[in-house]
Image 1 (cartoon, rainbow, N blue to C red):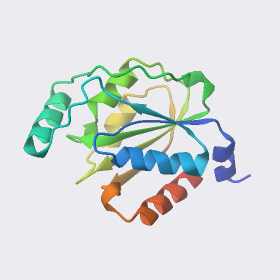
Image 2 (image 1 turned 180 degrees about the horizontal axis):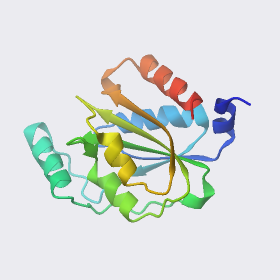
Image 3 (image 1 turned 135 degrees about the vertical axis):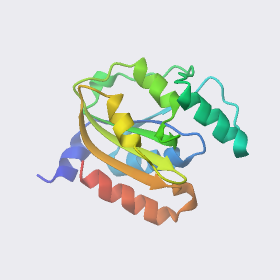
Image 4 (image 1 turned 90 degrees about the vertical axis):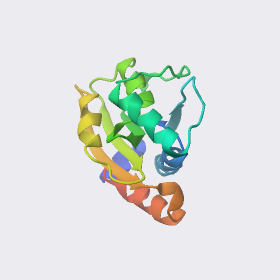
Length: 166
């Protein structure tokens, strides 16, 4: 049996944080490809910053190891065979909202796949991402540069090819 058929038969959850909609777009394509359940992490502070303020605020959260409060997420981690986690890249790290979710949610002994969205480079995000997830098996990693500004067909094709490898 091909790995895509195996992944397609696994009960899959996509858990992501999206500040500007990039990770939400990728999550929707993953949902379509795998029939996954999708859960969006939303912070209690929904204020959107822009321009330089966004970078100083976001980078400051990462550097100060802030763990912002998020709205309750109703998910039974144990019910899923594969969990796909997504985050924007903030200061070469997972967004603090995702880190906050992971620090308060027990995910252990699971097959995980990771994706990130960024406007420039991804830096060492996957190394930092994996450090937040000890005791799990990482079965795939992929990054997307500004997917909402990329032709949708290209983003969907990249997602479709990636999920076949999981």
